Amino acid sequence: MAPGPGDKTPGPGEDARVARTRADVSRAALGVLTDEGSDAVTHARVAELAGYSKTTLYTHWPSRVDLIVLAVDALGELPHHERTGNLRDDIIGELEAFRGGITEMRLDLILTGMAQWASVEEMRVIRDKINNSGQGQMRAMLGEILDGAELEAALSMLTGVVACPSIMFGTLPDDDVIAAAVDIVLRSAQRRKAFKR
Image (cartoon, rainbow, N blue to C red):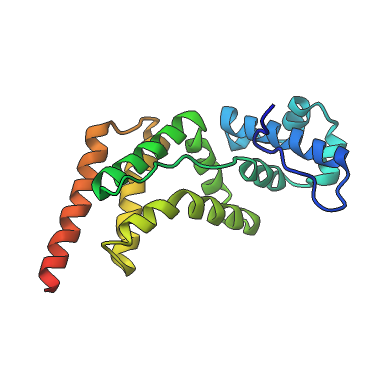
């Protein structure tokens, strides 16, 4: 059986039972987060699903934030588009992969939970890790034509085309909306490049 989210090889000196408990609790916490939202991630609910006592959870993960961090950390690899060399198609493909992640991995609930706990330092670390993993390929592609503030703005606009409707309205953009957003950014980059000459 292939390892699932939260299944990590025990660290040096980590007992196999501790690793199994961590994996079970990670899966349960991630399940609660993606099925019920961050408000439902409580010691009682995660303990119930994981099959452990609340005392065990409180011993290893004393706060709700610890459980949410554990859940988000158990998310695993985010979906990405395999690059073809056509910048427009690759950016569209990456946004479509993000849209698929919202559907398949319930990234909308993960993003909402991360936003809700944004002021907590442990969540900042996990949020940065998720953002770097999720946006890395898009940043690299846009970095071929943009830099500085323009790169950051384009990255925010394009990822926002998928993230905002899913979080704010519970909907996802169709292919035409994604393509239109990409075309707007690419046209703007071309005009800016021509203007600089």
